[in-house]
Image (cartoon, rainbow, N blue to C red):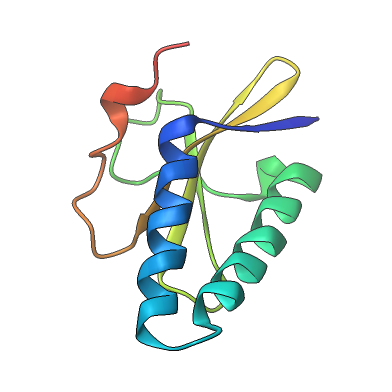
Amino acid sequence: MNLRVLAAAEAEIVEARDYLEGKVTGLGDRFVDDLAETLSAIEDQPLRFRKLETLPDDQPYRRAILAVFRYAVVFEILTGEIAVVAICHTSREPNYWLARRKT
């Protein structure tokens, strides 16, 4: 299944990488590696990840937590593709990204 990252989520990746790299040299690259592994797992088995507990059960959004960093990948399984809606820090306000998901 094809994996598509929305532009807003791409911007969040760059923002997180730059922030972490500013803290410790190399940390931004470690974040990107951790994220790449998570995205690969989503692409391979998207249904293994739970639906978001902060939304009603009829909502299609799922999340995958990165192994090392406190970030989550929020995504939706569509016909023929997986849409990555947000890359968010787990301490950030839940569901802030909902308004951006209009296909």
